[in-house]
Image (cartoon, rainbow, N blue to C red; front, side, top):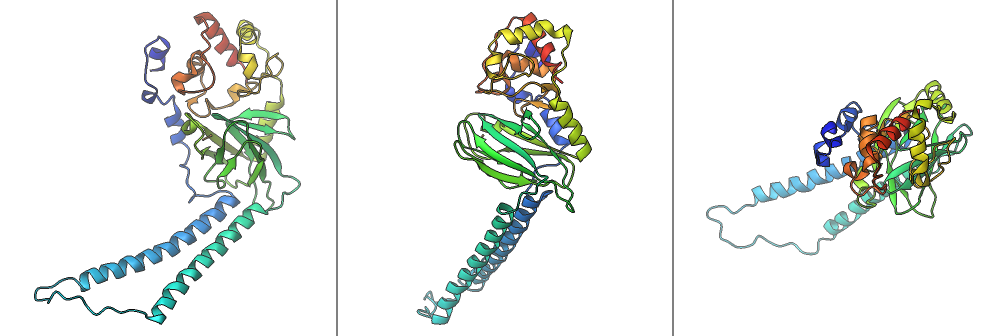
Length: 342
Ligand code: CUA
């Protein structure tokens, strides 16, 4: 389908998931009931507790209702008069006031305790810091201590429960309100312009975790996806070292680089070692180290990059990156250059 699209046949976006279905099907589904990080464990526990209490209340109320409907139904030979009506029973009124108050009070205490455990956790000296910046419709991740800038795929080290190495996130938005949510790692945190929120995760199982923007933020809210890649420390360190390298200069891609540097790409994107230092779009210095493009709309392959660069709205209608309107040769060479950015 990608081939026919490149040849100019319009294919509706819904007819092609750009390889994402295959990729996502290998990742366990996101669920708050399958936590792998302390804040998510706390939320799982409180959610289970609240659901249990409310389920018991539901069963009692629905059971009494069903019993009354059956036991006191109209029968042949009834005289049609109402049964005796009881008014003003102090014991009954006392019971149905105090029992719910006690239940609500318990729920408040348990919830407050959970919020406190998550919010007041001290930041250990070895914690990794990541600055999360939400954009319409993608995520920027900056590692201030490591000098790394990347997008949409957050790499963090595995945390050993016996000597935790959590990651602390500071979150801000450059435009509208968003919400950062990776259900298996932590609760949602609003990402708001001119206000820095914070949260933390300490993932205890290596793997890839799917997340998404959790607050409606415009046309492509549903496609503001993210991945958190949790790796054992040596793998994380290898990734970080590679991210800090300048991009490989590949002479065979020099024309593509010239195309990149002579178009408006440079106003929005950064590639270190070039004159491109824009901040409006994702940093492309190590573009090919990422599995996906467009904040999780497509697998990151040269064929998909070509579709994206030619006209992002084919994959992501409303995306703020304009169609580049390059001729075929320039487009091919530009994609060849982008594919060297490892
Ligand atoms: Cu960003 Cu919804």
